Length: 171
Ligand code: ADP
Image (cartoon, rainbow, N blue to C red; front, side, top):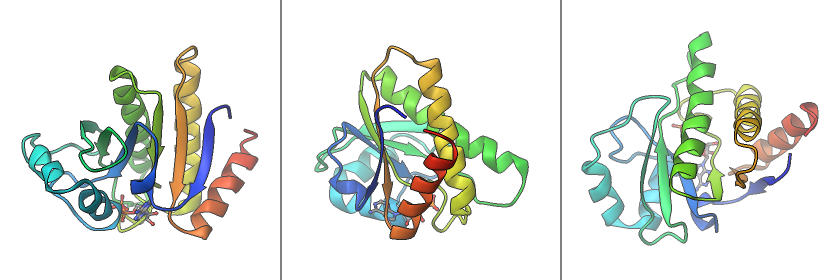
């Protein structure tokens, strides 16, 4: 797929204009990628998050990036994996709403972590398919708007899964 890449590494080092945080509904910080982003951005990020008032599952909110290279952080809340059909819908919405928000702010590059695949327990095989399908859908609905999308993977296993999913879906 044009402008879509899979990368292995720490998303806080991304040179995209915005990076996406796998946040929780309070937006008041957590472990995993959320903890890494807050550590790298500095305490002002938490201050701004406190003023936002949380975020519902499947939705997205934007803040500045402070000490990060990225100018903005988009905070989205993935579903806790339960095995129900609603999970997939909510996870897909996280990707779509994050991309919409980036576009609304005139941004042209975005880095995603593998939302919900850490403590929220989403199986990587399913989660990567949802991520790739959502991105393809968004690109089809936003033809003519350039958006560079990086899928950041924190493990070789997730990296291999994304490559396989992209291959299996013919991108
Ligand atoms: P969630 O609660 O949505 O499951 P986690 O932060 O626990 O969020 O995990 C989401 C994904 O982010 C996991 O695949 C995890 O390996 C990955 N991850 C953790 N730290 C980083 C990081 N610094 N950069 C990129 N990905 C990360």
